[in-house]
Length: 396
Image 1 (tube, rainbow, N blue to C red):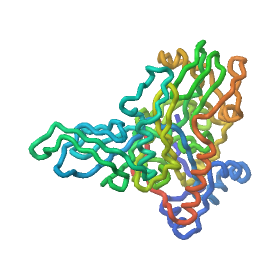
Image 2: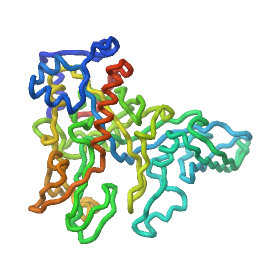
Image 3: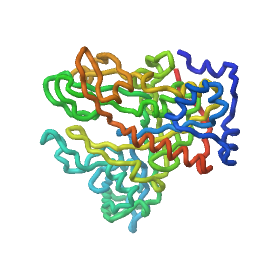
Image 4: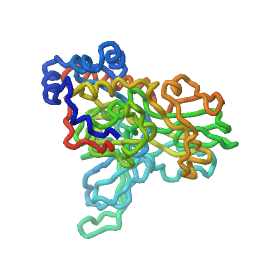
């Protein structure tokens, strides 16, 4: 793998994040989206593009199950050490401290019939609580405790909004997957998965990520993305906190360096009180469970021509592996049925084993494009500066 060999190269263009931030502050930085950079590099070449363009903005809006929030709801009177916590009947983890909890996006409301009546509807869960919080809606908070000398109260219940919380910190352990599977179903029955409803005999295929707009596909070797990178998160400014869980750089790659399967991931953090329900949306997945749509955008500074070339990646140069979610995926065989490009996937049909299959995205390309445009606008107004990574993420 090429890894960070690029760091040893002698580039024709060399910029620093500090230099680009000064240009952003003065209103002189040139910002384009990941769609716009494609034609610029094609017409001018990567060297000239790197000279002229300072930042490329990216975006993705997809269900991201490994998401949730740390909440501090403040002390009650008399005080309680809450060991069991519910928000709108959705259980939150209380094994942190007296009035701290973590609510996960995939936790289902207490009493939900789940899949006992198949397929379950999963109408409300943690993802919906998070959406309701950022929307300013009223949430019913229930607390229970075993009681202690310093925290004598055993039960407490009240209605709150996000403004009543001392802290509301979105912390998502695994977001913005760097490429992902294309899912089909080769079995003879309809199945219900986190990749949506898959009809039998490969009647449809679903896929995720926003292709050429997707953040980590525009920086495949993490030349610029790492701990401390400032990002668009849920409609506000957030940060990359660490590599995400399941982060894997040891994957198949094309000649352009882009992974051909699930690879890098991000752990991200931000202030929920500044976020918007437009970019944090609870999801109910028929027959599977609940999740959270998360909007993420990452600005990529064009420090040199290599990074410019990476950001010019096109859908036709990004490939995903096709997996059978009817048998192979749940069995853990790891068997790929083949690979297809994002150009093919976004066209609405793919051909696999001679069969024409309709495709549908789990992510929204329209919303991803909107995120990239918002981030571009923020930077052009000088409202969003680049955050320099204090530690780059593993790339090989």
